Length: 290
Image (cartoon, rainbow, N blue to C red; front, side, top):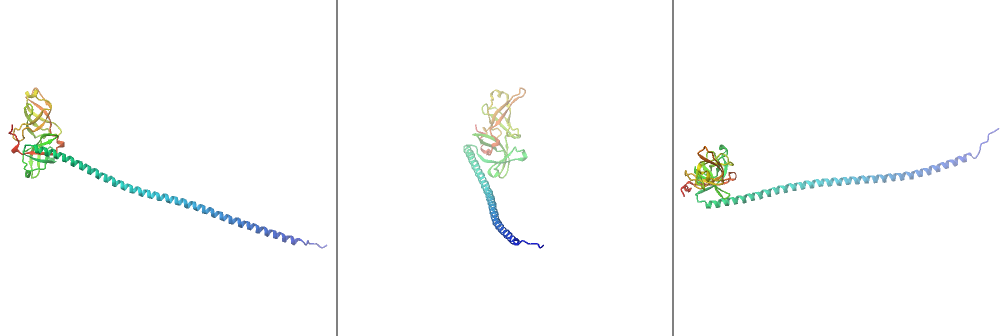
C-alpha cells in the first residue's frame, strides 16, 4: 500500500518564513530607533556633565585668581603700611628734635640772661665729658688755654634761678679743661652761713647725689643754725668768689664731746642736669669786696 503525502505543507512553511522576516524587520527597526534615542540621551547627559565640570573649574579658577589678587593687594597694603610707619617715625623724630632744639634755646636764653647780669668777668663753657681715671668725679669743659682758662679758676653755674658753686679748674689743655666738682673727696671750700656768718670748711663725699659736709663750725652756732639756711663761699683763700651759694642745711650733727659742729648740705646745683657752666677769672672775682 503506497503512502500519500500532504500537498499543502510547503505553503505553510512559506507563510511562517514571511512572518519571521516581518517580525525581525520590526524588531530591528525598534531596536534601531531605541538605540539612537539612547545614544542621544547619553550624549546629552555627557554634555550636561561636562558643562557642570567646566563651570566648577571656572569657579575654582576665579576663586584662585581672586585669592592671588587678594594676596598681592595685601602685600601692597603691607608695604604701604610699613612706609607710612617709617614716615611717621621720621616725623616723630623731627618733632622730638624740634622740641629738643626749642628747649635748648630756652636754656641758652636763660644762661645768656644770667651771663649778662653776672658782674664777674667770666668765660661760658659747656660740659663735654667726664674723666674715667677719676671714677667720673671730674668732668671736662670745652674751653682751655686758648679761651683764657687757667688752673685754679672757680666754676659756677646758673640753675633754676639760682647761682651755685660747681667746682674748680684743676687741669687745662689747649681747648679743653678739667673741673673738680665740690662733691669730690679732694674738694675743700671756705664757707660761711649767709644769715649767722659762722664759718667752716665744706668738702665732698665723692657722690654727686649725696650731701656736702660742712665742718669746723663753732659750737655756739648751734642755736643759730636752722634747716634750710644758705651756705655761701666766704671768699677766704682768694680762689672762690665771696657770696656764691654752695647749698642749704639739711642735717645738723652735734656731739657733746666734740669741739665743733658738723652740718650736711644739699647742693644748690643738681649735677645730674648740669650742662653749661661759667669759669670766673681770678682778676675780678670780687673776693675783696664788702
